[in-house]
Image (cartoon, rainbow, N blue to C red; front, side, top):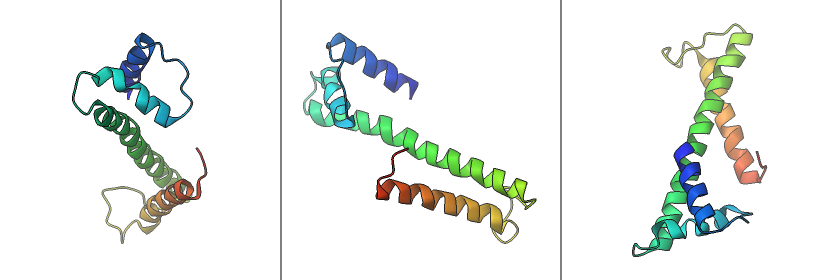
Length: 112
């Protein structure tokens, strides 16, 4: 993620692009990074998608994982990824429910 920000900032600054309001603007602005390649627009979109989707997927796991340890610990339930589902139902249900809530928030349109 840090490299994505550094490369993006360097490319955008050198191209004198300073007004970016949407993710689409940022993806288009990465065009100068790969302008010498054929299909540079597609390549810049792929680079941008990897930079956004990767950390987003990682964040979902971190948030649901941290909630899955916090809630069962507060309620004195068994909580460990080493345990089977039958031994730690509450723990795994918190993972499932928090992931589904995050997924629903995305489709409903609630912004973080």
